[in-house]
Length: 383
Image 1: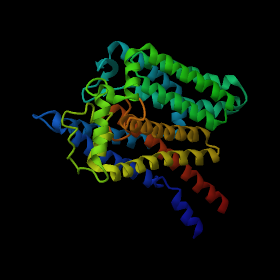
Image 2 (image 1 turned 180 degrees about the vertical axis):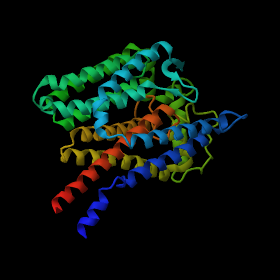
Image 3 (image 1 turned 90 degrees about the horizontal axis):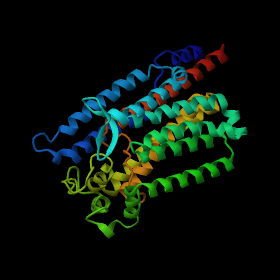
Protein backbone atom coordinates (compact mmCIF):
# COMPACT_ATOMS: atom_id res chain seq x y z
CA UNK A 1 0.00 0.00 0.00
CA UNK A 2 2.83 2.38 0.89
CA UNK A 3 4.62 1.59 -2.37
CA UNK A 4 1.41 2.29 -4.33
CA UNK A 5 1.01 5.71 -2.69
CA UNK A 6 4.63 6.60 -3.41
CA UNK A 7 4.32 5.61 -7.05
CA UNK A 8 1.33 7.93 -7.39
CA UNK A 9 3.59 10.80 -6.31
CA UNK A 10 6.11 10.15 -9.11
CA UNK A 11 3.77 10.45 -12.09
CA UNK A 12 4.28 13.37 -14.52
CA UNK A 13 1.46 15.28 -12.83
CA UNK A 14 3.31 15.92 -9.56
CA UNK A 15 1.85 19.23 -8.36
CA UNK A 16 3.83 22.42 -8.50
CA UNK A 17 4.22 24.80 -5.57
CA UNK A 18 0.64 26.06 -5.47
CA UNK A 19 1.45 28.82 -2.99
CA UNK A 20 4.06 30.29 -5.32
CA UNK A 21 1.81 29.96 -8.37
CA UNK A 22 -1.23 31.58 -6.76
CA UNK A 23 0.88 34.37 -5.26
CA UNK A 24 2.17 35.32 -8.71
CA UNK A 25 -1.27 35.07 -10.33
CA UNK A 26 -2.69 37.23 -7.54
CA UNK A 27 0.01 39.85 -8.08
CA UNK A 28 -0.70 39.85 -11.82
CA UNK A 29 -4.43 40.40 -11.27
CA UNK A 30 -3.80 43.16 -8.74
CA UNK A 31 -1.27 44.71 -11.13
CA UNK A 32 -3.91 44.74 -13.90
CA UNK A 33 -6.38 46.45 -11.56
CA UNK A 34 -3.84 49.09 -10.55
CA UNK A 35 -2.64 49.75 -14.11
CA UNK A 36 -6.28 50.28 -15.07
CA UNK A 37 -6.88 52.61 -12.14
CA UNK A 38 -3.69 54.61 -12.67
CA UNK A 39 -4.01 55.02 -16.45
CA UNK A 40 -7.73 55.61 -17.08
CA UNK A 41 -7.33 59.39 -17.05
CA UNK A 42 -4.61 59.38 -19.74
CA UNK A 43 -6.98 59.24 -22.71
CA UNK A 44 -10.62 60.26 -23.00
CA UNK A 45 -11.07 58.43 -26.33
CA UNK A 46 -9.93 55.06 -24.91
CA UNK A 47 -9.48 55.02 -21.11
CA UNK A 48 -8.71 51.28 -21.26
CA UNK A 49 -5.79 51.59 -23.70
CA UNK A 50 -3.17 50.48 -21.18
CA UNK A 51 -5.53 47.89 -19.70
CA UNK A 52 -5.92 46.24 -23.10
CA UNK A 53 -2.17 46.17 -23.59
CA UNK A 54 -1.61 44.84 -20.09
CA UNK A 55 -4.09 42.03 -20.76
CA UNK A 56 -2.17 41.06 -23.91
CA UNK A 57 1.11 41.13 -22.00
CA UNK A 58 -0.35 38.98 -19.22
CA UNK A 59 -1.60 36.54 -21.86
CA UNK A 60 1.88 36.33 -23.42
CA UNK A 61 3.42 35.90 -19.96
CA UNK A 62 1.08 33.04 -19.02
CA UNK A 63 1.67 31.34 -22.38
CA UNK A 64 5.45 31.52 -21.94
CA UNK A 65 5.13 30.32 -18.34
CA UNK A 66 3.21 27.28 -19.56
CA UNK A 67 5.92 26.48 -22.12
CA UNK A 68 8.73 27.08 -19.61
CA UNK A 69 7.19 24.62 -17.16
CA UNK A 70 7.88 21.84 -19.66
CA UNK A 71 11.55 22.77 -20.21
CA UNK A 72 13.91 20.69 -18.02
CA UNK A 73 16.34 22.73 -15.93
CA UNK A 74 19.14 20.79 -17.62
CA UNK A 75 18.28 22.53 -20.91
CA UNK A 76 18.61 25.98 -19.31
CA UNK A 77 22.04 24.97 -18.06
CA UNK A 78 23.09 23.77 -21.52
CA UNK A 79 22.00 26.92 -23.32
CA UNK A 80 22.79 29.54 -20.66
CA UNK A 81 25.82 30.85 -22.56
CA UNK A 82 23.83 31.00 -25.81
CA UNK A 83 21.11 33.05 -24.14
CA UNK A 84 23.74 35.38 -22.69
CA UNK A 85 25.22 35.94 -26.16
CA UNK A 86 21.73 36.65 -27.55
CA UNK A 87 21.16 39.19 -24.76
CA UNK A 88 24.47 40.91 -25.54
CA UNK A 89 23.61 41.07 -29.26
CA UNK A 90 20.22 42.60 -28.42
CA UNK A 91 21.85 45.16 -26.11
CA UNK A 92 24.16 46.16 -28.96
CA UNK A 93 21.27 46.21 -31.47
CA UNK A 94 19.07 48.43 -29.30
CA UNK A 95 21.73 51.14 -29.41
CA UNK A 96 21.28 51.32 -33.18
CA UNK A 97 17.65 50.43 -33.90
CA UNK A 98 16.00 50.94 -30.52
CA UNK A 99 13.27 53.49 -29.97
CA UNK A 100 14.02 56.37 -27.61
CA UNK A 101 11.68 57.27 -24.73
CA UNK A 102 12.51 60.15 -22.37
CA UNK A 103 16.01 60.34 -23.84
CA UNK A 104 16.88 56.67 -23.30
CA UNK A 105 17.27 54.17 -26.16
CA UNK A 106 16.20 50.99 -24.35
CA UNK A 107 13.35 49.49 -26.37
CA UNK A 108 12.92 47.43 -29.55
CA UNK A 109 9.43 48.01 -31.04
CA UNK A 110 7.42 44.78 -31.39
CA UNK A 111 3.99 46.20 -32.18
CA UNK A 112 1.99 45.12 -29.14
CA UNK A 113 4.69 46.36 -26.79
CA UNK A 114 8.27 47.62 -26.82
CA UNK A 115 10.68 44.91 -25.73
CA UNK A 116 13.46 45.96 -23.37
CA UNK A 117 16.61 43.80 -23.81
CA UNK A 118 17.84 44.97 -20.40
CA UNK A 119 15.18 42.76 -18.78
CA UNK A 120 16.36 39.72 -20.75
CA UNK A 121 19.96 40.49 -19.78
CA UNK A 122 19.07 40.01 -16.11
CA UNK A 123 17.79 36.47 -16.58
CA UNK A 124 20.56 35.64 -19.07
CA UNK A 125 23.29 36.72 -16.65
CA UNK A 126 21.71 34.83 -13.76
CA UNK A 127 21.53 31.63 -15.83
CA UNK A 128 25.15 32.05 -16.86
CA UNK A 129 26.28 32.69 -13.27
CA UNK A 130 24.37 29.63 -12.02
CA UNK A 131 26.12 27.47 -14.61
CA UNK A 132 29.51 29.00 -13.84
CA UNK A 133 29.15 28.51 -10.09
CA UNK A 134 27.95 24.93 -10.57
CA UNK A 135 31.17 24.20 -12.49
CA UNK A 136 33.64 26.42 -10.65
CA UNK A 137 32.35 26.67 -7.08
CA UNK A 138 35.66 25.50 -5.58
CA UNK A 139 37.61 27.95 -7.73
CA UNK A 140 35.37 30.79 -6.54
CA UNK A 141 35.99 29.85 -2.90
CA UNK A 142 39.73 29.39 -3.20
CA UNK A 143 41.06 32.01 -5.61
CA UNK A 144 40.69 35.55 -6.85
CA UNK A 145 40.23 34.63 -10.53
CA UNK A 146 37.27 32.41 -9.81
CA UNK A 147 35.60 35.43 -8.22
CA UNK A 148 36.82 37.89 -10.84
CA UNK A 149 35.67 36.08 -14.02
CA UNK A 150 31.89 36.47 -13.47
CA UNK A 151 32.46 40.12 -12.58
CA UNK A 152 34.02 40.62 -16.05
CA UNK A 153 30.87 39.25 -17.73
CA UNK A 154 28.73 41.53 -15.57
CA UNK A 155 30.98 44.48 -16.47
CA UNK A 156 30.47 43.85 -20.21
CA UNK A 157 26.69 43.90 -19.77
CA UNK A 158 26.97 46.98 -17.55
CA UNK A 159 28.89 48.95 -20.18
CA UNK A 160 26.25 48.19 -22.81
CA UNK A 161 23.47 49.12 -20.39
CA UNK A 162 25.12 52.39 -19.40
CA UNK A 163 25.29 53.38 -23.07
CA UNK A 164 21.45 53.36 -23.22
CA UNK A 165 21.67 54.71 -20.37
CA UNK A 166 20.22 52.36 -17.71
CA UNK A 167 22.01 52.63 -14.37
CA UNK A 168 19.11 50.99 -12.50
CA UNK A 169 19.53 47.62 -14.25
CA UNK A 170 23.30 47.80 -13.73
CA UNK A 171 22.78 48.19 -9.98
CA UNK A 172 20.42 45.18 -9.95
CA UNK A 173 22.94 43.03 -11.85
CA UNK A 174 25.74 44.13 -9.53
CA UNK A 175 23.84 43.42 -6.30
CA UNK A 176 22.53 40.03 -7.44
CA UNK A 177 26.00 39.00 -8.64
CA UNK A 178 27.54 40.03 -5.32
CA UNK A 179 24.77 38.24 -3.43
CA UNK A 180 25.14 34.92 -5.24
CA UNK A 181 28.94 34.97 -4.98
CA UNK A 182 28.51 35.45 -1.23
CA UNK A 183 26.17 32.45 -1.10
CA UNK A 184 28.68 30.46 -3.18
CA UNK A 185 31.31 31.05 -0.50
CA UNK A 186 33.62 33.71 -1.90
CA UNK A 187 36.03 35.29 0.59
CA UNK A 188 35.03 38.36 2.59
CA UNK A 189 37.95 40.54 1.44
CA UNK A 190 36.85 40.02 -2.16
CA UNK A 191 33.44 41.46 -1.34
CA UNK A 192 34.92 44.45 0.44
CA UNK A 193 37.15 45.18 -2.55
CA UNK A 194 34.41 44.79 -5.15
CA UNK A 195 31.85 46.78 -3.11
CA UNK A 196 34.30 49.65 -2.72
CA UNK A 197 35.02 49.52 -6.44
CA UNK A 198 31.29 49.41 -7.18
CA UNK A 199 30.49 52.40 -4.98
CA UNK A 200 33.36 54.33 -6.51
CA UNK A 201 32.04 53.52 -10.00
CA UNK A 202 28.50 54.63 -9.10
CA UNK A 203 29.76 57.92 -7.65
CA UNK A 204 31.84 58.49 -10.79
CA UNK A 205 28.83 57.80 -13.02
CA UNK A 206 26.69 60.20 -10.98
CA UNK A 207 29.26 62.97 -11.25
CA UNK A 208 29.82 62.26 -14.97
CA UNK A 209 26.18 62.82 -15.98
CA UNK A 210 24.56 66.04 -14.77
CA UNK A 211 21.03 64.56 -14.71
CA UNK A 212 22.17 61.87 -12.27
CA UNK A 213 23.68 64.49 -9.98
CA UNK A 214 20.40 66.44 -10.19
CA UNK A 215 18.48 63.31 -9.18
CA UNK A 216 20.78 62.80 -6.20
CA UNK A 217 20.39 66.40 -5.01
CA UNK A 218 16.64 66.17 -5.54
CA UNK A 219 16.53 63.00 -3.47
CA UNK A 220 18.33 64.75 -0.62
CA UNK A 221 15.85 67.67 -0.58
CA UNK A 222 12.97 67.42 -3.09
CA UNK A 223 11.11 70.34 -1.52
CA UNK A 224 13.87 72.75 -2.47
CA UNK A 225 12.61 72.66 -6.07
CA UNK A 226 9.13 71.22 -5.62
CA UNK A 227 7.83 72.53 -8.96
CA UNK A 228 10.98 71.62 -10.92
CA UNK A 229 13.40 68.73 -10.47
CA UNK A 230 11.73 67.63 -7.24
CA UNK A 231 8.19 67.67 -8.63
CA UNK A 232 7.80 63.92 -9.22
CA UNK A 233 9.12 62.88 -5.81
CA UNK A 234 7.04 65.54 -4.04
CA UNK A 235 3.90 64.35 -5.86
CA UNK A 236 4.77 60.76 -4.95
CA UNK A 237 5.18 61.64 -1.27
CA UNK A 238 1.88 63.54 -1.32
CA UNK A 239 0.14 60.47 -2.76
CA UNK A 240 1.64 58.19 -0.12
CA UNK A 241 0.81 60.60 2.68
CA UNK A 242 -2.79 61.18 1.59
CA UNK A 243 -3.51 57.45 1.71
CA UNK A 244 -3.36 57.36 5.50
CA UNK A 245 -4.13 54.06 7.21
CA UNK A 246 -6.93 52.69 5.03
CA UNK A 247 -6.57 54.73 1.83
CA UNK A 248 -8.95 56.82 -0.28
CA UNK A 249 -10.58 53.73 -1.81
CA UNK A 250 -10.14 51.87 -5.08
CA UNK A 251 -10.01 54.26 -8.03
CA UNK A 252 -10.16 57.39 -5.85
CA UNK A 253 -6.58 58.59 -6.28
CA UNK A 254 -6.24 62.31 -7.03
CA UNK A 255 -2.53 62.39 -7.88
CA UNK A 256 -3.04 60.04 -10.85
CA UNK A 257 -5.10 62.74 -12.61
CA UNK A 258 -2.11 64.21 -14.41
CA UNK A 259 -0.20 65.25 -11.28
CA UNK A 260 2.18 62.30 -10.88
CA UNK A 261 4.26 61.35 -13.97
CA UNK A 262 4.83 57.62 -14.65
CA UNK A 263 2.12 56.74 -12.14
CA UNK A 264 1.25 53.50 -13.98
CA UNK A 265 4.87 52.33 -14.32
CA UNK A 266 7.74 53.15 -11.94
CA UNK A 267 5.57 55.13 -9.47
CA UNK A 268 2.54 52.86 -9.28
CA UNK A 269 3.38 52.11 -5.64
CA UNK A 270 2.45 55.73 -4.80
CA UNK A 271 -1.04 55.27 -6.30
CA UNK A 272 -1.46 51.98 -4.42
CA UNK A 273 -0.53 53.81 -1.22
CA UNK A 274 -3.04 56.58 -1.93
CA UNK A 275 -5.92 54.24 -2.76
CA UNK A 276 -5.30 51.41 -0.26
CA UNK A 277 -3.33 53.13 2.48
CA UNK A 278 -0.91 51.66 4.97
CA UNK A 279 -2.93 48.44 5.29
CA UNK A 280 -2.92 47.89 1.52
CA UNK A 281 0.78 48.42 1.01
CA UNK A 282 1.60 46.16 3.96
CA UNK A 283 -0.46 43.38 2.35
CA UNK A 284 1.23 43.95 -1.02
CA UNK A 285 4.73 44.00 0.46
CA UNK A 286 3.92 40.83 2.41
CA UNK A 287 3.07 39.06 -0.87
CA UNK A 288 6.24 40.31 -2.55
CA UNK A 289 8.29 39.28 0.49
CA UNK A 290 6.64 35.85 0.39
CA UNK A 291 7.57 35.56 -3.30
CA UNK A 292 11.20 36.40 -2.48
CA UNK A 293 11.21 34.01 0.47
CA UNK A 294 9.78 31.19 -1.66
CA UNK A 295 12.46 31.63 -4.32
CA UNK A 296 15.25 31.61 -1.73
CA UNK A 297 13.74 28.60 0.06
CA UNK A 298 13.57 26.64 -3.20
CA UNK A 299 17.17 27.63 -3.92
CA UNK A 300 18.56 26.61 -0.53
CA UNK A 301 16.66 23.34 -0.61
CA UNK A 302 18.12 22.54 -4.03
CA UNK A 303 21.65 23.44 -2.86
CA UNK A 304 21.29 21.18 0.16
CA UNK A 305 20.44 18.33 -2.20
CA UNK A 306 23.49 18.99 -4.37
CA UNK A 307 21.51 20.57 -7.24
CA UNK A 308 23.91 23.47 -7.61
CA UNK A 309 22.70 25.00 -10.88
CA UNK A 310 19.06 24.94 -9.77
CA UNK A 311 19.94 26.22 -6.31
CA UNK A 312 22.11 29.11 -7.43
CA UNK A 313 19.59 30.13 -10.08
CA UNK A 314 16.63 30.11 -7.66
CA UNK A 315 18.60 32.15 -5.11
CA UNK A 316 19.48 34.73 -7.75
CA UNK A 317 15.84 35.04 -8.79
CA UNK A 318 14.89 35.56 -5.13
CA UNK A 319 17.55 38.25 -4.62
CA UNK A 320 16.45 39.89 -7.90
CA UNK A 321 12.78 40.09 -6.91
CA UNK A 322 13.54 41.25 -3.39
CA UNK A 323 16.12 43.88 -4.31
CA UNK A 324 14.06 45.32 -7.18
CA UNK A 325 11.05 45.62 -4.87
CA UNK A 326 13.23 47.36 -2.28
CA UNK A 327 14.57 49.84 -4.86
CA UNK A 328 11.14 50.65 -6.33
CA UNK A 329 9.57 51.22 -2.92
CA UNK A 330 12.65 53.15 -1.78
CA UNK A 331 12.51 55.46 -4.80
CA UNK A 332 8.79 56.21 -4.57
CA UNK A 333 8.97 56.86 -0.83
CA UNK A 334 12.04 59.11 -1.06
CA UNK A 335 14.47 56.72 0.63
CA UNK A 336 16.57 56.23 -2.52
CA UNK A 337 17.47 58.40 -5.54
CA UNK A 338 15.17 58.06 -8.52
CA UNK A 339 15.84 54.91 -10.60
CA UNK A 340 13.69 53.46 -13.36
CA UNK A 341 12.85 50.03 -11.96
CA UNK A 342 9.42 48.42 -12.04
CA UNK A 343 7.54 47.00 -9.07
CA UNK A 344 7.56 43.24 -9.84
CA UNK A 345 4.30 42.00 -11.46
CA UNK A 346 2.53 45.28 -10.61
CA UNK A 347 3.96 48.07 -12.78
CA UNK A 348 2.94 48.43 -16.41
CA UNK A 349 5.72 47.09 -18.64
CA UNK A 350 5.58 44.05 -20.90
CA UNK A 351 9.30 43.23 -20.87
CA UNK A 352 9.55 43.14 -17.09
CA UNK A 353 6.34 41.15 -16.67
CA UNK A 354 7.23 38.57 -19.33
CA UNK A 355 10.81 37.95 -18.18
CA UNK A 356 9.84 37.79 -14.50
CA UNK A 357 7.00 35.38 -15.35
CA UNK A 358 9.46 33.10 -17.14
CA UNK A 359 11.71 33.31 -14.05
CA UNK A 360 8.81 32.22 -11.83
CA UNK A 361 8.06 29.32 -14.19
CA UNK A 362 11.71 28.27 -13.84
CA UNK A 363 11.26 28.34 -10.05
CA UNK A 364 8.18 26.15 -10.37
CA UNK A 365 10.11 23.74 -12.60
CA UNK A 366 12.99 23.58 -10.10
CA UNK A 367 10.50 22.79 -7.33
CA UNK A 368 8.79 20.19 -9.53
CA UNK A 369 12.03 18.38 -10.36
CA UNK A 370 13.06 18.44 -6.70
CA UNK A 371 9.77 16.87 -5.63
CA UNK A 372 10.04 14.29 -8.40
CA UNK A 373 13.58 13.39 -7.34
CA UNK A 374 12.54 13.06 -3.71
CA UNK A 375 9.60 10.81 -4.56
CA UNK A 376 11.77 8.59 -6.74
CA UNK A 377 14.35 8.34 -3.95
CA UNK A 378 11.66 7.23 -1.50
CA UNK A 379 10.46 4.56 -3.91
CA UNK A 380 13.99 3.19 -4.33
CA UNK A 381 14.36 3.17 -0.56
CA UNK A 382 11.13 1.18 -0.14
CA UNK A 383 12.19 -1.30 -2.81
